[in-house]
Image (tube, rainbow, N blue to C red; front, side, top):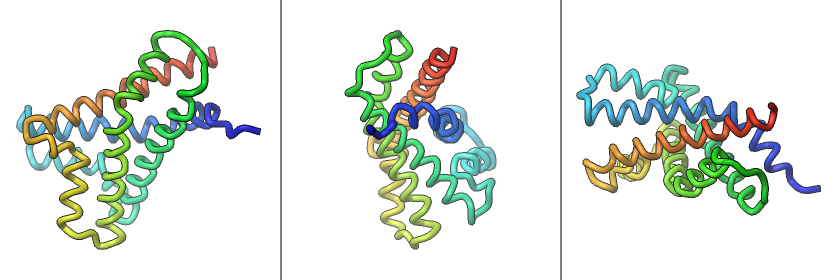
Length: 175
């Protein structure tokens, strides 16, 4: 019997999308708010508390980030395995696949570095140099000050769009 990749992807994606959407929206809001709209430090801190799960407290925040990051990686891996499979037509499926292919590496890098940064600091005494490197990758700062905001906006908006197209596909399947 084959591993039920499509079924797991379909069943878990709506739940994981909530976590991923909160992370994407707050990440974009923070970066664009700071760069383009002069977001205050206090507002930025509140947005980052949602982004990192700090609202759960310091003991639970790393678990929140771990669940969100591993959830995104799970969807990436199961999505990749389904690319070989033939199935379905339509513009929503086409966009879901195209966005998945285009955003594969940036989203995987963002998920891995976010998880390593948060859990490394909370549980493993991550050095400041390593933390800075992980955050540089996570937020696209390696592209420079002016492009990192665009990196965050494009990846955050892209994952939201991909998730919304995926929800359309789920609705069609059930309908």
